[in-house]
Image (cartoon, rainbow, N blue to C red; front, top):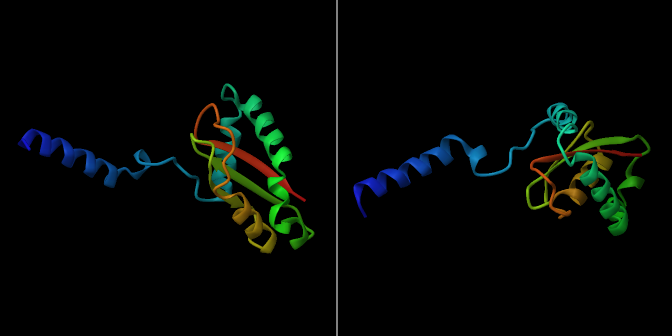
Length: 128
């Protein structure tokens, strides 16, 4: 292997170590940050069309009814999900931490929806 190729490989590896966001979708770490990202993303082209598609997909597959989460508390839980370019929910953050919110996190994390028009795609859910 030439020294030029070794240098290029080293540069790529160090870039992925120093800038891990290049290697995966960016995920908002808190509910408040995710909520801001969701609000900001609503102006993107295709946002409303994909949101309607995602709602239909959820209703068809009854994803939110899995796990009996609605029965785990009486207060509403607000969630923001982050969906990657493949349509997989990679992050779920909640406004509260309780059995109901933890249940919904487990149910939604990793679910594959149709591919969004851009990524990350943020969606806001209110579970009553």
